[in-house]
Length: 154
Image 1: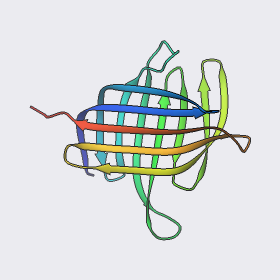
Image 2: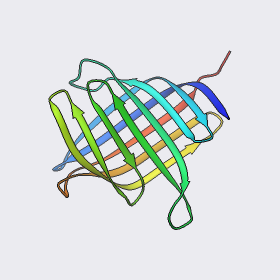
Image 3: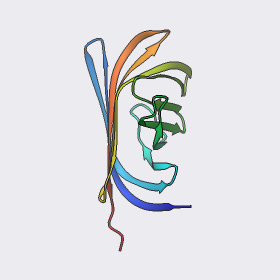
Image 4: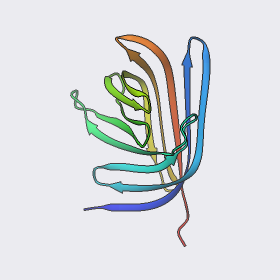
């Protein structure tokens, strides 16, 4: 089985828009990456505003053959710690997203409008634009971008 582990530095940015107001969350730091036959994984510790304890974030990017027979991309962001969630992004699909916060569980749907993943010699990049829905109603629009730069190995 193929497996390639690398150290990396990441820049992670989330922009959320609610009722015309925009909130930007940015994080930069160390990450570890693993490329396997089943997909590309990166994990990092993320500091979320208003949450004292760090959250571990795992991104999995994978390609698959869609129902139409074409190659498609799926990105899954899983967070563990005081905030636990699993967000699945597939262009044109609505996916369910349980979001456990320190004060309780929230249930959302994610409608992905744009999705991209690329990988090269020096690193990888992922991005998504999506709508957050609750009870079928839009509560926000958001986008994330993740830039991964491999660290040179000695």
